[in-house]
Image 1: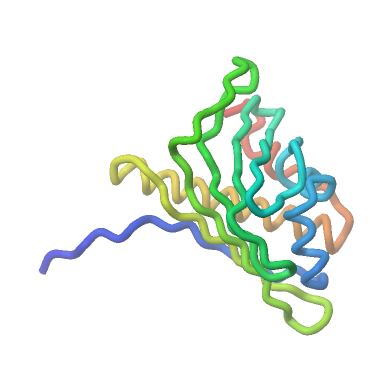
Image 2: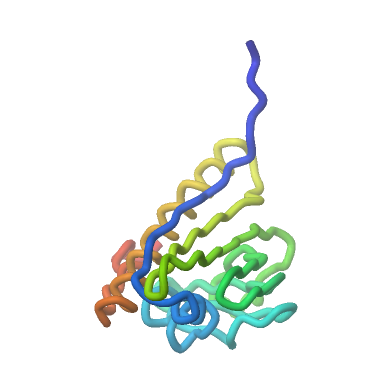
Length: 166
């Protein structure tokens, strides 16, 4: 019996022991997000707006466009292919994946964050590798978020993942 290939999806989640509003804000406000994920942003996430996120240790930036925001509940973005900061390349807006965060309160002081990333492009092997890389990356992001919000620790997990650069 033949099977139909399914699109690759990266999906992960974690309970963060903080209220939904605080956890949600950690992904909206780059003053917080830069403590556990990227190193620089051109602004806060706002519906319909584009911002550039940068990982200065890797000399890489990506444009993201906020598709939807439901305060304290959901964020949806289009995440475009990365570009080399050193080359002065502004990046293209051709290939994008979709990333959706959902924030589910667990009582008054805990929130389950789920992240789903889909819409990868390329041949089957490339799509599979992109989904695996995304899943791993978002696991590091959630671990860093948990350490930062719950314990006030900046673990630098994303930067330490590839100490020689990528």
